[in-house]
Amino acid sequence: MQKTYIKLFPLIALFAVFVISTVIITLGSQSAHAAQPTVNLRTASPFAILSGTPNITDAGNSSVITGNVGLSPATGAGVGLTCSQVTGTIYSVDATGPLPCRVTNGPLLLTAKNNLTTAYTDAANRTPVTTNPEELGGTTLVAGVYDSGSTKLGISAGAGALILDGQNDPSSVFIFQAGFNGTGLTVGPGSTVTLVNGAQACNVFWRVDTAAIDTTANFVGTILALNSISVANGATINGRLLARNGNVTLINDTIIAPICEGNDTGDDSPTPGLPNTGEMGGQYVLWAALSTLLVISGLLLAFVAYKKRSI
Image 1 (tube, rainbow, N blue to C red):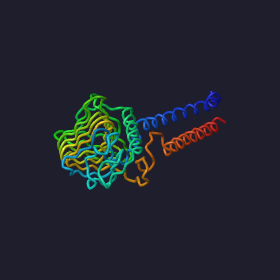
Image 2: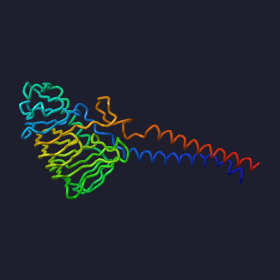
Image 3: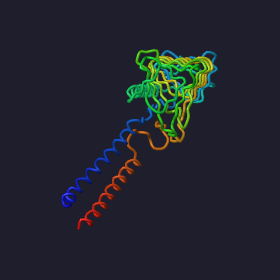
Image 4: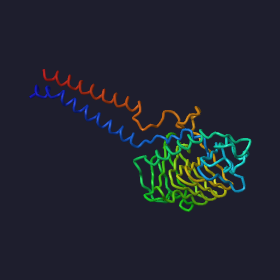
């Protein structure tokens, strides 16, 4: 009987290693499945406002924009901003638009709009998706992909702030989706989006058909709109207003294109440290290898001890 156990011991050891390795890989896969890489805006990243047609307007010309501004395919004559309002560059497809800060660069704008389309499609196709109620106010969410199960997403001050919890991971990514051809995103008067525990505005994305942000709202994230974006009086946007086809309208607002903490390279991947690619990281692989090695060592020691007892 003892000889039979000794002969079977290598098979038992291999089976134990297989089971433990499977558990480790499964846990790693679940972690990778949950992680989301950021939405790469590429050449659209430096833009606080990027609009399609017919224009960009600002009633009273009192809004303050930090970041570049671009209008394409409509001509620069449709840029209703002054140079003093923009800390950045105003780009146009032709030799019209506000001077002296306007730069004519049609190819750059075409590339940026194409990159915006790619980013829009990327955000729309992210999975897995967690379906939330249409009203996001008064909720706390961790990194992930969210929709409302309808064509609308809303935040109202009466419901409370939408809190985005980074769980101490500055590369945590939040993606919100609204159905195609819907009413899109509605942010009520005085409503607030709050970032906690390391969440960053550069990693928050809203993929919608249209967006309307009401008076005095404090909003966070990059809006990727198929059509138009409107911002009412006195709102603050820590993010970007990127409209593929429609226009962008402002009234005495503040828009600040976000830059991720730790991103001093000026590239188009604003994730600090190692990129959050959703792949199983090197540290996790090392941990899995060491765990497996320890299991094998323990089984071999047990085998040697068992064999000595059987002699």
